[in-house]
Length: 411
Image (cartoon, rainbow, N blue to C red; front, side, top):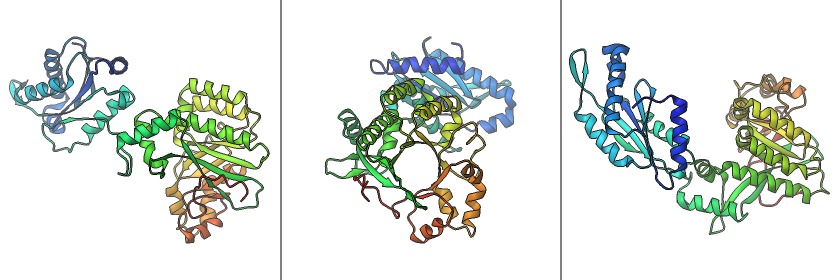
């Protein structure tokens, strides 16, 4: 059995994952325990020789459809097709490695290998996410761990224990299917006189007891189940409907956070383009908010998306800005309307003696080009008083105004 290239291995993993409902295959990751000591004693020649012996041993146990990949010098990945029992093969391999002598420089070595394995359960969302989970399990093992064998299962957990993960996923899927996602609105308070009403739209799930579940509690579930992009699309649809229904209230401006889906997927941008074709020029009344790091990792998609948004009068906001953020492309290569600072930056800023000067030094050039600054997550009344004088354009947080189900356009 030949070792696969990384690209061939990942393509094969995607193909196995597509068939996972009928016959789930899986991953096994093998880590040579204490491999740094082996490398120090035997050099890379010894490590490579041991790896070749490990590949040969695994190949003897697996059929020709399995794939092998040396992802790192210490880790061998096995991709098993759906007709092989991952659990039994993992146990067999674990036992075999514990009693197999490896040969090196006319010496026999008894080595230990730790492993993490998983079935390619569709709830992972993709083969790539399953592989990430397996590698995180291996990386999470202590350096002094020896001969550990760990199954990696799908974990779709909410941040609060009030709702079981499976119930949370079911509630999310039912809410999307039945168009029952709840919306709350949190005002952004302008620090200068403004005729506009700025509101951030936030999704919520309504539990059976009537309580609303915050996005922070169900977004991890949505991410694991690959439902974030679907939620994004639902939120844009709802925002456009609200703005059309509020056509007489031209001062209303809605902010809407988005994942990287529109930056990554051209088909989703095409869907958005079709959706916006039937909408009059929004003239800045809708603002899509992206994490700056997502934008910088997908510049080509961002360029195409922002050109589309510009044609339809949709504003652009960059979030989670902090000291060290790469702002060089903003305002020139990338259009910018709003800058939302990172909560951690806001926390540090409120302790500064020169709040206005510090904020100006970070984003002053962009503000000169028309970008407006938002300071979010303000909870401390003493901080609010100081941040009001920072020169920011908007303050936001539960202290300023908690989110509510009412749009409050008459406030």
